Amino acid sequence: MAVSDHVDLNQFMEGVKKRNPGQTEFVQAVQEVAQDIFEFIDDKEEYHEAQILRRIAEPDRVVSFRVCWEDDNHNIRVQRGWRVQNNNAIGPYKGGIRFHPTVTESVLKFLAFEQTFKNSLTGLPMGGGKGGSNFNPRGKSDSEVMRFCQSFMNELFRHIGPDTDVPAGDIGVGAREIGYMFGQYKRITNRWEGVLTGKALEYGGSQMRPEATGYGAVYFLRNMLQHNDEDIEGKAALISGSGNVAVHAAEKFTEMGGKVLTLSDSDGVIHDPDGIGQEKIDWVKELKFEKRGRIKEYAEEFSGAEYHEGAEPWDFEADVALPCATQNEISEDEARKLVDNGVKAVAEGANMPTTIDGVEVFRDAKLLYGPGKAANAGGVAVSGLEMSQNADRISWNTEKLATMLEDIMGDIHEKTVEYGTEGDYVNYVKGANIAGFKKVADAMLAFGVV
Image (tube, rainbow, N blue to C red; front, side, top):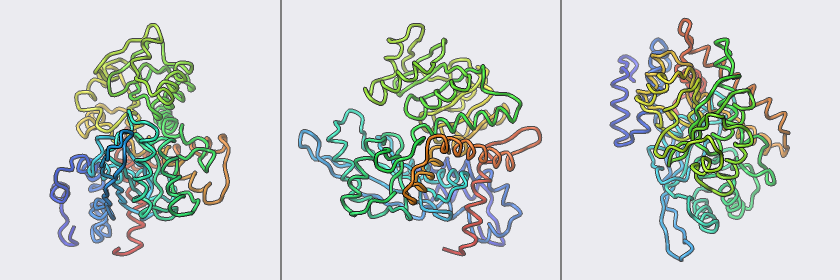
């Protein structure tokens, strides 16, 4: 943006598309933020002069590397790995590592861009980053996963550190993968330091980390409801996914007096009109985390539940929805289904699970809609607290961390209300975008042109 001739939103987005050809996920993420930020900075010349949004939408660096490993049949396999370091204006790069066949540079750039604002909202000193590989751990032996993780870290270690970039887990990267990567980092560097979060408790992990994203999304949902003189108790929820975020969101929602009706995976959805209570949630945890089974087995175990192959949770009636699976799982049509099925509030446990057109449906219907950068910030918040514990060589108990998580999600809600209130409606997307942007932008202004 030139000082004397500000570009408009369309011109800005044309530039983003031209610089990032074929990267649809990244362009979508920038569009979703830019349409709110342009209005906010219209009369703020200092942001225009410094081209702040243009700079945030250009990662500090994108590292791409080859990952070679040997499978159990002694075949040499080749994958591609990435680390996207988007912005470190307010702290070391921070963001997960994802192992999944759908991982591309575009997906990781979108996630790192979103992470920049999400981390800003937590109030903790963390910049935005993301990494991963198109490696699929599903169906691989423990030995194969170990060899891949060690090879991945053989390159990644050059680009990370406790004061530089602190990765965490994400889709396809759980405690097993974190353990293998951390062990290799120690082996290569001969240093024990908090360079990864999501570690097991035995070697520097934090209490509450597995629960944090799911619990945080439910805390944010409760805050939205209470701001409108409602509560979770007695409400029915549709939850997508059956991984870490989904099951812990179901757990906290149930604890607060709600009834969870659905869980899903990439094959289909289970619908349980009797509710997925704590005993059933514990069964799902064992199924998914220990046996690595499929959600269809739930309907075989519990009478009254039905499995719908190829379906989505959004086909059923409920009061609230918590999308906790993956990006773009709610299209415009599916968003309309949610509105038609009586859903009044949506809190995103996943990253960008709703398309831009779907978000517009929620906005037009005046739904209480908590976007991922606000509603699912609980995970990275506790990761940030794990970094603090590692730095000081201490370990906080569950009660202290639970209180801190609840307070952080409450603070995020207050920030989004402050910048997103439009008459009697809170536009949480706008509030989250502006609140997250402002802190990063002001830090960048302080540094000058770097």
